[in-house]
Image (cartoon, rainbow, N blue to C red; front, side, top):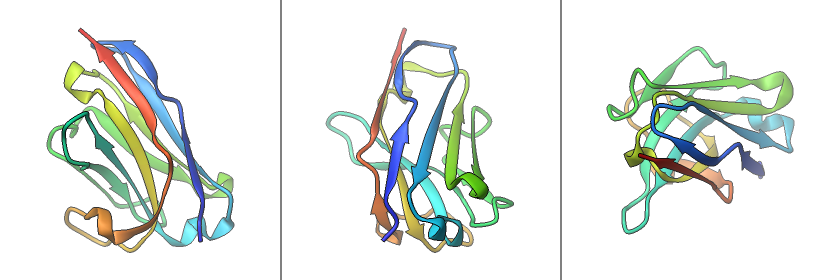
Length: 125
């Protein structure tokens, strides 16, 4: 099983940028799609972004399209979520998901077998 750990969360102001990292302990990380999901208090977990194993195909939720960028560096077993123009409604715990198979469309949580513990992102207005 691929174990992933998220980092990079924090408290920022609206309009600021933040970069989250998702680092895996196993090189097999490069064989799988990686996705970011988020969950705000009292809400269901929702999809944010996904990248294929090679890093050349991505999909985003409409709410973050044009503001967030997902990428990966397989040589470092790491995926990133660059977040710009942050809004208070982006506040949530952000989770990295791995061991997933994705080619197109919006992935579901159930498509990924490995999850990190999450990192808190808080955007103040």
